[in-house]
Length: 277
Image (cartoon, rainbow, N blue to C red; front, side, top):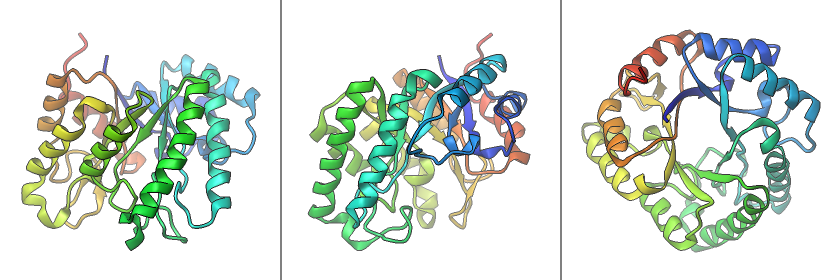
């Protein structure tokens, strides 16, 4: 059954109990968690399992599930030490999956940009970048097999998997059920061609619907900046209808806005989904 969720980092709370309460009160049933929300690094070097026990208890008390967690690092960073450190942190998250209950860890597929893993670089489109990414992804697939988790690959213009077409190529090459897609319309449309956004998303849907396990609900303003769903030009009603007809049943995770818009965004998105009543 589809669950409506939000990035945990949307809320700044001092305890996991207050964080879980804030998510639930805003109208969400689940969250994409981030270890930064409890004062750790997104990819911790070691895990505090006592803290995880508390988090799990607090979220269960608020009836908020944690199906997915952020595990982003630069998978093709020019410095191999950065890649290795990221992979070690990813393994720590995979080991902790059962303790907190998540089954998917999201990825940043990487860039040659040495300053920012969210910024593009001309070499991202080269064969060397693709080859190095595939080698690193295969290592993560082995970790995922060991700990029974899924890898959530999100196409992003600034990364080596920069488009729906590149993501389709990856899926066809890898052929692993451990690799799924995080479908974020914000990352798949070009603001300068916003009049064609619906057609662009339809093509992306055709490429990726069969492997999409998570939808990110993030809208785009006319200037290309992120905004809350319903406040930009992306047609979420049409997009959701496409996925629902395809049988999508994963979490829909909202982000790209501040806490002040969390409750209104939940109401907007819930109106687009089938009633559970």
